[in-house]
Every structure is written in structure tokens, then in C-alpha cells.
Image (cartoon, rainbow, N blue to C red; front, side, top):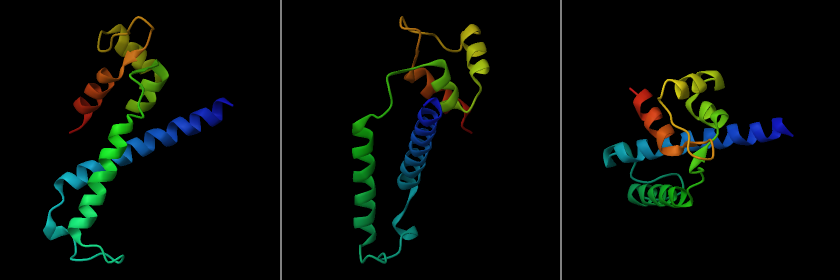
Length: 115
């Protein structure tokens, strides 16, 4: 049962990273980079509008929890549970009253790790 949950969690994390990468690419996309029409017959403006709408809908659902466990934080950051525990003891993360790490701290750690 645990393996199934891990598979689902890993798939969700991959989807989240893919959605973030798509959002980043859509923000930097210029009209010169998009062909006049797609194979489906959509114009570049229609394609960009659909992509932006899909990203807005995804963001509105907030699939991420407001607080995560040490194991979830490790998965999200691509680190071991032991490393995240060390980061907690070093003061890089702080646990809330429920013993979980607020997602904002994970977001800040992810943005600090990106070049």
C-alpha cells in the first residue's frame, strides 16, 4: 500500500514540476516562436490563451497541502529525509505546531536552489 502512495506522490510531484516548467515556458514565449497555426488549426493567440487558461485553472485548484511532512519535503526538494532533518536542526526549516513544515518554506528553499 505504501508503494502505491509513494508512486502517486511521485507522479503528483512530477506533474507539479511539469506544470511549473510549462508556466515558465509560456511566460517567456513570444509570438515569433509560435507558428501561425497549429496542426489543429488554432492560431498562436488561441494556443497561448488555452495554455494560460489551463495554468490558471491548475493554480486555482491548489493541489499542494499548506504543510508537509519531512518525507514529503524531502521528495519535493529532491533530498533525503535525513538531509531535511539536518536542515530542520540547523534552523533552515521550522516545524509548525503539528510537526509539519509550511509549504512556503519549501517554496523558498526550491527558489533558492534554482540558478
